[in-house]
Image 1 (cartoon, one colour):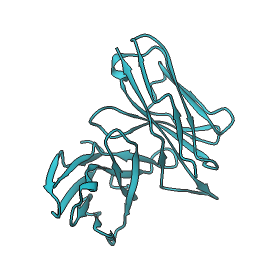
Image 2: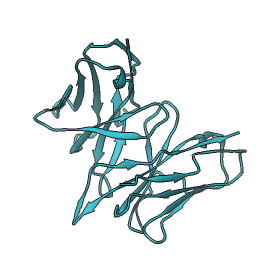
Image 3: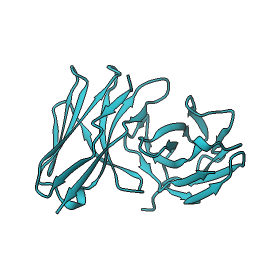
Image 4: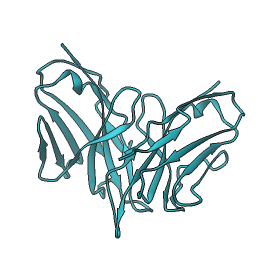
Length: 112
Length: 117
């Protein structure tokens, strides 16, 4: 089982739609979780952290279910500018100070 | 604030040749990472430095890859000799350490796109 698995995508949605991405992780000892955004041929950038209580940033809502080892990202009222690949990221507290383990990403395409 | 700088942006080499990539992290960021991102995959950590010391190089193919950060600032990643499967984007990232706390946010450079033919 891969350490971080995501919906394969691509997700093609119209502007204004609500879209949800799911992610599962295999290491139950993982402590920190994030969503990064990567635009085409660009570097990844932190979108938001994911907290146990769930957290919201504008149109974006992230949730964590530790029992199911499951993370989600909900985007409401999709904009054309939301088109990107969304990477689920888990901080693994292995041998060193903790490294980021990235999922393969889910590609979102928002159409007019 | 200047971001993470990388060069070159693109490189095409033949298999068995050597190549080197350079990274200059954000000023003051003690931790520097090199990632390999193959098309269609997420970034995979190759090596992590804190200042000029290696923290984790468990996923670095040491028979052909090497990296150094001699003065705790800039870093170079070298591949010698390159294989076809090394074709990927090589991303450098840096993060801040405040006291004993490692910041979770990593700032990525634009990457070097390597094509091995």
